[in-house]
Image 1: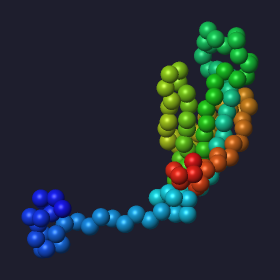
Image 2 (image 1 turned 180 degrees about the horizontal axis):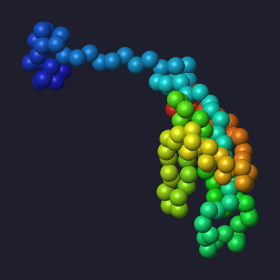
Image 3 (image 1 turned 60 degrees about the horizontal axis):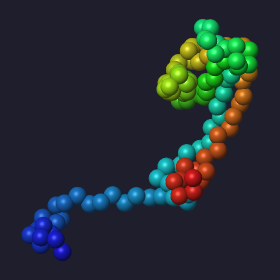
Image 4 (image 1 turned 90 degrees about the horizontal axis):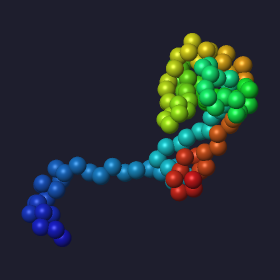
Length: 121
């Protein structure tokens, strides 16, 4: 027993906050993450880059887009050495999807091992 716990009487111990009980799902996770579908778009470049002659004529850039809640979309787009992650409006998503139509679009269903559980990922 630590010195602190020896000094606390019963009333003081009762006043301490209780530790929250965490409930795990069958997959060992606090939350259930359902699989979703993404549009992965391989598109022509907007601005000419030095490396464009070395790659496919319609596959100069890539981004991933999927519907989110409340008429919003999740966007993932690589920018050289960083990754843009943004929530965009329907109007903005329409621009990206029109750009995607100039290249090739894949509908990719994501699979989340164990429904989001860390023990089975």
